[in-house]
Amino acid sequence: MERQAVARSRRAPAIRRILTPYLFLLPALGLLAAFTFYPVALGTVLSLFEYNVIAPPRFAGLANFRALWSDRYFWIALENSVTYLAVVPVLQGCAILLALWVHRSARGLGWLRAAYYLPVVTSIVVVGMLWRWLYDDAGLVNYLLLQLRLLHGPVHWLSDPGIALYAVMFVTLWKGLGYYMVIYLAGLEAIPPTFAEAAAIDGAGPAQQLWRVTLPLLRPSILLATTLSAISALRVFEEVYVMTGGGPIYATYTMFYYMFDQAFGALHLGYAAAIGVVLAAVTIGLSVANFKLLREGGLAYY
Amino acid sequence: MSAAVEYAGLALVAAVTAFPFVWLLATSLRGSGAVFSFPPVIVPRPPTLANYVGVWETMPIGRFFLNTVYLTGMGITLTVATSALAGYPLARMRFPGRDAIFYAIVGSLMLPQHVGLILNFVTMMRLHLIDTFAAVYLPSAASVFGIFLLRQAYLVIPLEIEDAARIDGAGELRLWGQIMLPLVAPALATLAIVEFSAYWNSFLWPLIVLKSPEKYPLAVGLLNLSGLFAHNTRYVAAGAVMMTLPMIVVFLALQRYFLRGITIGAVR
Image 1 (tube, rainbow over the protein chains, first blue to last red):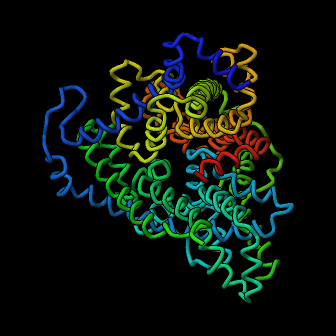
Image 2: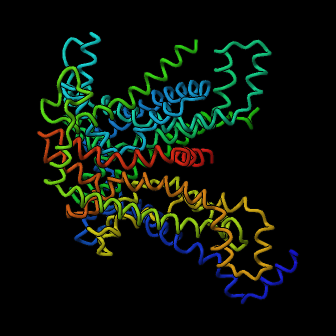
């Protein structure tokens, strides 16, 4: 039966048979080449040029990077982006805790899971506007904290330069919690219950089981989620754009924001590309470090 | 830790994630009074649709809505089509360069996409596509996640089915279109739903390439709206509910597919 099938397919014109797989791939590969590979490659090269769209690009060597080095706003943006990384451990800690709880008491909690996921599927524009209202001097957050007597007076969440960045970080946490919880939940469901049983027989308490068994086995999920979350923290833009516009006085100005302003506001495309390359370098460095740190673990390790 | 504490924790987190939406809905249904009244109004008395009517009459919300539906529809169609095509030979044919192509596709996830953003803008300008819908959906019309997802789905189809079709004389195109494609329908549905939320909510790229307000999707239009009606929060809230409601309905109806989409994306 198999031989017959092969023989029949051999009868098809040879050239068509050779081309078929490539024709199937053509639309996707063409689009990826045009809008992913080409722009990333050329964008990296563009960081060595001066380019404002109107005049032809002019080679500038490392001038863009030298200019960045003495650019005050670049350092402010870099510092804010790196500070934003603080959201990663908090977010992942909360997501793991939530996943552990949901995993243990999963039955009949479908609607709770849906509630956690609501912010994930909501547009960042709606989320940003909503939190701008909640963070208002007379908004719900201040009201609740005043009622609970945790505050003496209203906090200017988004207009106090010392607080605004952390207020935006909380929104990132709020919006991402459900997403990462689902990743961890999938990781937890992949762990056979025999591990917990064996640990219990060996006399491990709940805390020991968590630290010595569950978390090490969850490491691949943690590696994936922390990497994703760190990359998006370094590249944060949309939350900031909608909620604070980078202010007050650059308190929430991030690398991506600076790149965006330079590219599409000032039309300094080469300079913007240089900012993008530095951001990429920081991101790659961090991802590699994270990978080295969390590589060992998971089912294959034991 | 006792079960009671866990349940209390779960309920508290759910309240924190869901309550702002309740407040948003209540605000959009309120007829009058300060938006920031204490205690916060959860059940507006009497509830009114006046804000919805008002925002519909003063802003082209209907237009934004249609734009979003069109962009989302085109985006999903193209992404599903390109993924359904590209995943097939990667899973079921043998040809020179197959593995290299597959690794290049998956590896592109590691590329710093934000650097590409600048050049994509230049490309769109060169193609004279700035301020067109095509500029919005073309750059994301091929999805690495989609290709990967469909390849996995094609891989698990038993060889016997393929052989039987070939004996019946099916050519490569018919084999794919009539036999294989129906068998990967669940994967196509998962991809369509994941892409639905991506296109429906997409905001940064449309903001960059669209110039005329009559072409804005809801996300960009709504941001404009919030600037214009900074003093009328209830109008803006009504607009926000109109944008969010379809997404939430789709999510609640097809939750399983959404969550499967993330899990497949995650466990690579």
